[in-house]
Image (cartoon, rainbow over all chains, first blue to last red):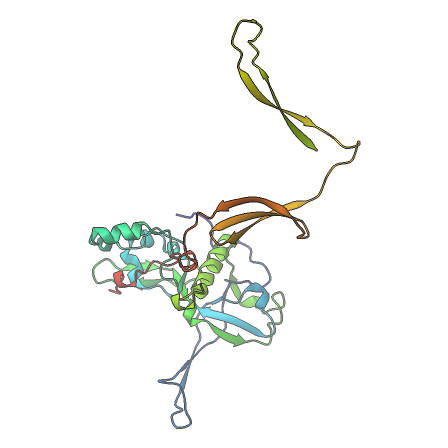
Length: 212
Length: 100
């Protein structure tokens, strides 16, 4: 287990990548298919998440624009793997092939598949997810499980696919922001983990893009 | 500046005139220094380039002027570009995790 602090005790008076904020709306436009002059129905879902994380790089928090992702409850399937259940922030890091799977999945795997997986390096799991460690400001909730005991937790997560833009007149540069909205700041180690994982999320190269 | 000379002669145990002496070769290194206070402080860097199946080490000045080639060796990394790029960054595990 990487035993480092996740949140600084005294946050800086600036907005940083990974900071937890409050007081921002979340927006989600919904369509069944791309709009045409004949079919142009859409809906916009607006919500007020209790907390959101900054996914803009620090230097890009300016010009009245910021990118955010809402903090949402973790998925119960994460707890199927005792390695993750012990510390959900392990999902934020590179893990061995064996630790990436629930034990029963690993044990029932054909030997040749195990050998192939064991030959691989450590890698990410759930690449679109970043876990925010439990903190007293986060509301407690219950993970309901059919085949195991329910779990009460304060872990939250962001899904990089849920990132969106907010225009805020009070954000002109990282140090000129509505600082009262800032609730938590990641430590350098935790912020490095977030930066690494989101970079890999966006940096995947599909096979068809390889140039020989 | 460093100068290396080879000296070939007789082994130290040739004091006996009837013993068999063994030729030996040793290397003597002498150092020639320039005038006091004058040293070659040319900053150099070494850059490796791939050239076909070879890897060439090129000596350059700090402002990228070519000085020479210091080493040529066979490139032992046989991976293709796609193999180098496609190192696993994610375990494909979704099918093993089901929401209960």
